[in-house]
Image (tube, rainbow, N blue to C red):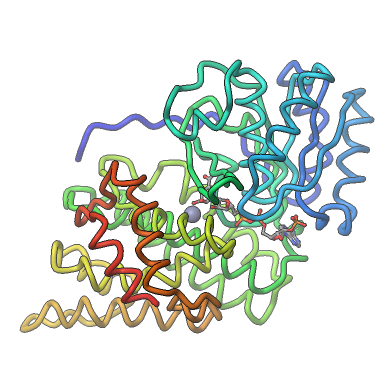
Length: 392
Ligand code: NZQ
Ligand code: ZN
């Protein structure tokens, strides 16, 4: 097991009606002027936003609001939020919504305290020294941003989608009421479930073999999410299944299943370029590339892929032909994605890639020739282009 640091400062407030506690939670953080930041309308339509305002009023917490965070949240809105926070003297940011509202809130929290251009932090030209504190009311089980140290923003200039990691943006609290996720359309529910699976798999597919405890946790998490996703296909208002994926979403991306190992993360990098260029749903984009990535890299670690096939996908181990076991595991995972109506190719994602676009995506994915991606196999521009070709 590798050395590791594990830090999860987020207070989780989980269960029915927990959004009513928001005002008290903010007061606990010793803050009094809040920016309420949300998406493109679902929280208004469901009445959640009004309930949140009520909870703030009840505790005498004052606030200003800014909606409009779209999926693949944009830098221009972040700039708007920073300006608003400075003008209004905001000392706390409350994100109400999904990963996009949360990531946008994190960027605003960083940018308000940063003198330069916040985008420079995403380009790694500088690192953040301070941020406004933030809290979250989560409405979709997906990214794990409610406990993670990362934020992903898309710059409309050049359509670059870039992530940033900093302990400063781990939310102080996360309110998670499974009932708030009942209104999600099926596609978003399943895209979210896929993202949760992928956050666990990105960590699981790693060369370290002496990580028995976290392997077991990861395998159990993957099986629970697959089971719950199948239930949610038929019963979107099944409380227990909603609760299962909501909690799994946080545990899949708060670092727990990555303790002691390096992880892979190539599929996320492949998806981020697709998301930046074609504005696809993040989880669906991951499903579209995963099988091609797996087939391209599995020979680097047949034992790890076979463990996944047997322990997660229930494939019988073929002692005479371990690679056959691996390929059956990959096929079983793709079959699961089909079952939950997720794409297993970029074409099924609704994007017809040209050769030129593949070249551009691959180049951007290497940060214009500055890096390789992946852990199981280090991938350069040609490898990345090949995976996009296989996935197209
Ligand atoms: O904008 P609204 O109206 O709220 O609608 C959203 C949006 O259209 C809707 N929605 C959310 N909750 C709902 C609901 N509709 C009805 N009822 C509800 N309860 O669902 C759509 C998707 O929402 P979004 O916030 O975009 O989804 P998600 O949570 O999947 O976030 C995706 C973004 O997070 C990034 C992704 O790349 C993408 O930009 N990620 C962030 C990570 C992090 N910070 O740790 C890690 C991830 O790997 C990921 O990269
Ligand atoms: Zn993700």
